[in-house]
Image 1 (tube, one colour):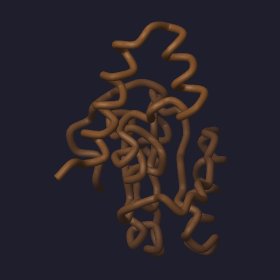
Image 2 (cartoon, rainbow, N blue to C red):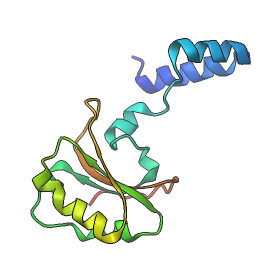
Image 3 (spheres, helix red, strand yellow):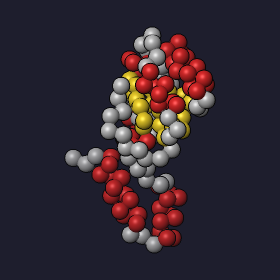
Image 4 (cartoon, rainbow, N blue to C red):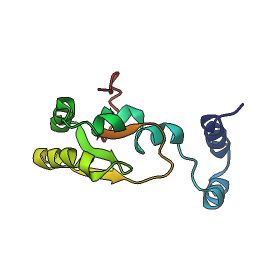
Length: 135
């Protein structure tokens, strides 16, 4: 059974063997193959290696704010916070206020292709590959 990542790897491998003209035509007709799309859909559209901290939807709906998120937002490597758009504003409001308080931007992600139970991630603009991102 082939997976999406196998198909993407095959597309990229095939694309790299073509001439520049063939690559341009292929991209024009089929669009650029997206790397690690399944992984990105698990982390609100970001690569796993850029995630500093992650909360589940259930954790975001908790009444209290997780101090680990506040610490992550204050981290100099932090680019922004992403919030799953499926969550009610009454649950996400406290994190939005926290991001504003700390001076970090946030984005609410509305995408029907999102998978998993990720409710919020704090991300960097570069790969950090932090071993344990879950709280």
